Structure formats: structure tokens, C-alpha cells
Amino acid sequence: KKWWWEGRGGGERLPAWAAEGALAMGVARQCPFEEGKTAALSRGKVNYRLEGPDGGPIVVCLHGLNASLASFQDLGAALQRHGFRVLSYDLYGFGLSAVPSGRFDTALYVQQLQELLDLVQRPVAGEPMTPVNVLGFCLGGLVATEFALKYPQRVNRLLLVAPCGLGPREEAPCQPLLFGCLRRRCRGSIFMGLVRCLACCCKLPGRYYLRRRELEMFTPDARDPDSEAVKAHARKNTERMAWGFPHSITSWLRGLRDMPIWREDFADRFELLANSKVPVLFIWGDNDCVVPHSEAWDTLEEIFGPRGASCILLRGGGHAVIVDEVDVPQVSNCAAAWFIGSQDPNWINCLNMYALKAPGSNAGPPAAEVVGLSPTTV
Image 1 (cartoon, one colour):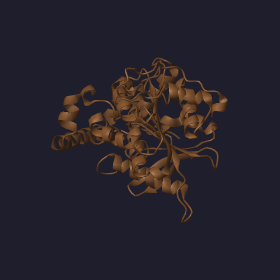
Image 2 (cartoon, helix red, strand yellow):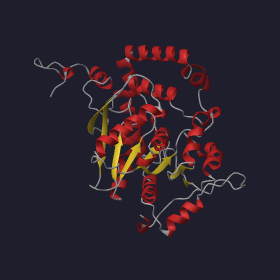
Image 3 (tube, rainbow, N blue to C red):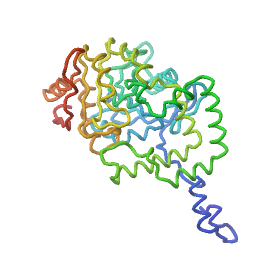
Image 4 (tube, rainbow, N blue to C red):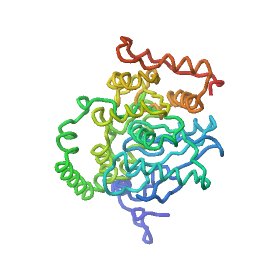
């Protein structure tokens, strides 16, 4: 198939600069997102994948802000090798899922997950739903927490990987924009309206700009940002942002506006989780620069220390522990052991070593290590 700049009929071709510009602005580019099945839910269509051995326990994977189900491509495959059936999907407003009107808050995303599980599990009339394991990464950790609070009978175990909602507002970047404008009712509405107008008017130039630049914001916070694997991931992130422009920009801002990302907004929900019967485990990279564990540690110990929960620290891991090729095996091994409730001595020792201390203890976070579990653990 020939595109218009390659010439049709008369065989004339546009100059190379024009053809390159057309490609950069999005003409004839294939969709860069991972396409799965489509579920028609009450707030719009949802792109999802359910993969793994039939009959295996289900693990629901919830991605972070401005991401998609592609975030779990490697981790999902690793969990499948452990015998799990992995359900990953695009949250509303991101990836290939619908962009509904209204607020992008936890209520919307909890409803989305509940309806998707109803569709995927299809219970026999009169029988209860089989509980699932839930893995929430970053912003997905907020959704996972709220789902566990609203539907505790549907959650077997909860794993939160570098979740939002524990860091203080005072450490947030761009505070005048976030708290003085975007998260204010009137100012935020005006600001979002201006952004939508500018983004729609500059759709093609915006795509061209994104694809012609290497932007640090698209590079994952990984161990080695200069590695070829991380660079390839950054290019994919850039392509997805550009392909989805302008809604990729507006959805990102709507998430920042509506989600309870900071401690002052969500600590009370974590307190309810700690007092619930849902087992919870945390995993964090000790070199996370996006959601630093050091900013959340005091709150973690205060809320989850009395319960005896654990927070495993991966030595040298950044924020992108679910995509980094070094961290994925560690996260998958820990997740598998946690979800099946392994009683392997190595795993029990790992949980005890990273157990959160109750308030009043002078001990700080344990030294992070490379977590390697024996095959018998999982």
C-alpha cells in the first residue's frame, strides 16, 4: 500500500522532508499500544488482556498514571510462568480504553475493575465470586486499595508496588500549578479548558514535536537509563504519548487533578486498609526518584507497623521495577510467593527481615538487597 506522499498514479513523490514530517505528525503510523480484547462496560469500552494457564489463580495488574497494560508485558509473562492467569487492562482515559466524561477518581476506576471482573469471571448463579490477587503499581495502588476496601470479599491478597498516596504534598513538584490552579475547582476547570483548546488546535504540530524530541519525562526511572532496553521503552512511551495526543495530555492532567495522590488525601484510606482483613505487602525500589520510599517510610510504619506488614526494598531499583529487566524477576518471585501464601523458610525470613516496625522503634528501613528466592519458594 502506498501513502499519499509516495505518489499514486502519476508516480510523483513529495520531497523527503515532507514525507518525514507527515510520518512524524502521525499519518500512516500504526497504533503503538498493545491491543487485546474489548469489553463494553457502563462508562465505555475497555482494552484488556487475560492470559495464562486456564484455571490458574487470577492476578489483576493495575498500571500507573499515563501508562497502559503494556507496562506489565514482562512482569505479566513472568507471573504466567508461575502459573497465574494475568488480567491487565487500560484504565479509563489511557491506552486504548474509552475516555469518559466526569472525574478521573478512584470511584470511576473501582467501578471499572468491578465490572470487568464480573465480565471475566462470569460466576455461576448463586455462587460467590472467586477472590483474586491484585497488584497495583504507583497510581494503580490507589485503585487497588479502594477496591480492596469496597470489595474485601473479592480480594485474596494485595501487593502494592511503589504506590502513591503516602508522600507529603510539600515534596510535590510544580506546587503552584498543582495546588494553586489544577486542583482548584474554578481555576482548574478554566485551565483544563485552555489546555483542551490548545491541544486540539495544535494536534499535528504537537505530535510532530513529541516525536522529534527525546524527552526525559518519557524515560523510565530505571537502574540504567542509558541502556538500550530503557531507551527502547522510552521511545515506545514517546510514541504512545504522541499517538494519543491530545487526549493523552488531558487524561494525564485529569488524573493529577482528581486522584488522591498525596498523604494528606489518602492516608485515612490506608488506615482503613491496615485495619481490614486483606493481607497487604509493599515492594519498593530503594532508589526510586518518582515516589521515594524515604518520603513514605514514616507513614508506612505508623499505619502498617502495628499490623506486621512488610515492605521489601530492592537494592538499586528505581520506580520502574515492573519493567526493569533486573527487577522483574525479583518482583515476580516475590509476587508469586505472596499470592500463594508460601511458607518456604526463605520467603518467611524475607518477610520478617522487611517487616515494618511499630511506632517508637528507632530502627530505620532495612538495607535493601537483591531478592532471590529459591524455586521451591513459589
